[in-house]
Length: 388
Ligand SMILES: C[S@@+](CC[C@H](N)C(=O)[O-])C[C@H]1O[C@@H](n2cnc3c(N)ncnc32)[C@H](O)[C@@H]1O
Image (cartoon, rainbow, N blue to C red; front, side, top):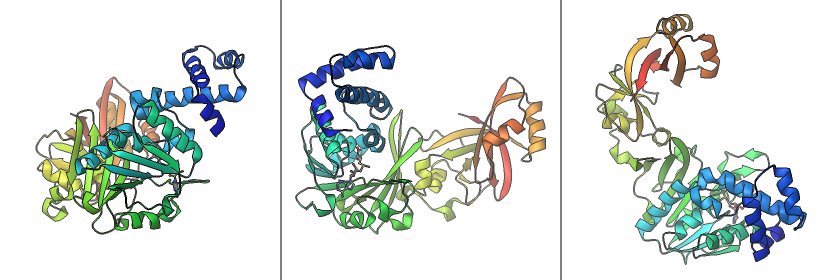
């Protein structure tokens, strides 16, 4: 997006155009030509881009989206509001009074921390994102300063907490090599020598996490969104899984984990539990097993089984109805016999592609069912289950 066109959008004239672009309804081409009667094409394009991005942003940022500003990439890279609010809550509980965001983008995290009342400074290399982040603070009536600067040369010592969310994209797409992030891993490592938080990809290898740094995997409504590394006095444990759901937030740490040896592998009981992705990434499946008085179905598989029924924010629970044949032909016959026409296929640790298997099962009937394909103590197994 063009910086001049964005700045113009913030003028009274620009705001009036944006308001009209938001409220005009009908065919997009007609809307565009109506707006062009009174405004320059680049201004109309800037206004219509914001209308479209605000609509797209709603899923990520909720009601704030209608008042905020975006760039397409800036929106894609922005932290989801519930995850940013959780991080901001942790920072507030720590007593953060001054905060610097070293690569604030359009300000997804920055606005969440500013809301806690901390004095916030955001910097970014990209002048358009800086202008957008500043506009977002102002649109949400939040304090804070934003400027164009290079994070790698900034003295962060005046701030209680420094935060970074390095960009994990290059010109050719996402990059998994931490040294290719911007700013790179070497910068992150230096930052983690102080009170800091760094957002990283959920796939970060455990052995990359420096000693004494807490790694927190966060999921929002069942999807793992990020890992956050907390250092200095912000680190409270080694590994943590935080699960954000409709019922609020729940967190599990390695202190809740008795370890694989204590939990062990056992026969499938009356209930099966599918741990949340954040729990799996954090390596805390055995903590879930201990929490439901259960064990693992296989030492390498993230399914837990128990004879007891528990509701847990950390795992989806299923009642085990019966074991069905694992091989395709007898499985097809068994599902046919039960009149299963609609089938949910869950799988872990087996080489099955549900989208390819489903048509081959030639489902027929009115019944709906869920099967779990997995390894039980090394053996391919199919379980008919009912979610509870
Ligand atoms: C993933 S985005 C941040 C998104 C942000 N946390 C949010 O929620 O909106 C990373 C940002 O870091 C910026 N960046 C990369 N290297 C930088 C550097 N050396 N100094 C300052 N900013 C940098 C990029 O321009 C990009 O806007």
